[in-house]
Image: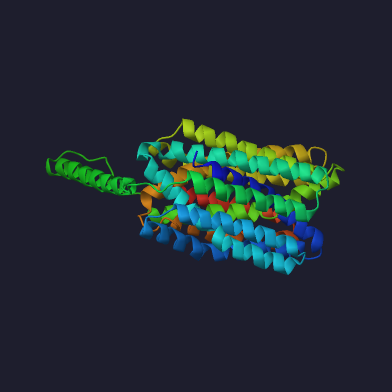
Length: 400
């Protein structure tokens, strides 16, 4: 039940994720892509040190609920403030400020899941959380679809986003509690050290006895894992920051209603929901390590396939929808596996590092993507993202 507040929070931001770029395009059509890229990049750059601070602070104080409440009430207030202006510059500034406070719930949420369940259940627990909240995101996209159909004005749409975050705050105030004991991540760290030492003794004893040794005594490559997270986030952000504009364009080119843009992203989110529940059903410590690289390779192939949309107009919407559904599915698997691995690899006190690493790539990509789209074309977006996903695939192969 403690997840209920996060469900409403994701509803609000699911609606906002597509509405806000399209709204900015409507009030700053000439430089709309520039403002979208600037907004996303600035928000993510500011969120990086904030994520690290919130992660350090919640582990230092052993209080997690308060940071979740800060995130939700701050989002409620700032989303309401967005209704008071139609200036693109001020929207960008307010969104950037909100990003600093919004990320306050991420590290505490990850720690709560890690400390409430054993290591064997981490992937299943993260998958259940992400699947449940992804349904909220999907419902938020559906709300956007209906607000678009019925021409709900931007002010009322932003008030709806604000109200959903207020509900999230009230639900979390009642349902979220801090864990009484914090020890699971420490136990996992000790187990990994003991296991590594035992394998070392086993290999050494075989060498001393003159027995041929085929085993390799190696730890996971943490640098490769961190680099892979940054690159994956970079490619994803390059691809998806201008994606609502691209989908809006191909929908307009086929003379279909603009409300279909929300419907396509609903299906993208639906693919994510399927991925989360599949990840939960196939959880296991070795499962994530062995599959992360293959998931990244799939994303690379899908990015290159998006180029086919530029060669046809007849089936462009259908092809784009199918590719986005598969991308949502792959992203869900990637997130569950890397989240559980990060809680195993990243020590206590640095719970925000995962969000920082994702933020580094996301911040760079969110500016690069719209810039490439506006200066060159979406063809170069798809090529760039596909190549970076390929490099990420190699990086995760090194990690494993």
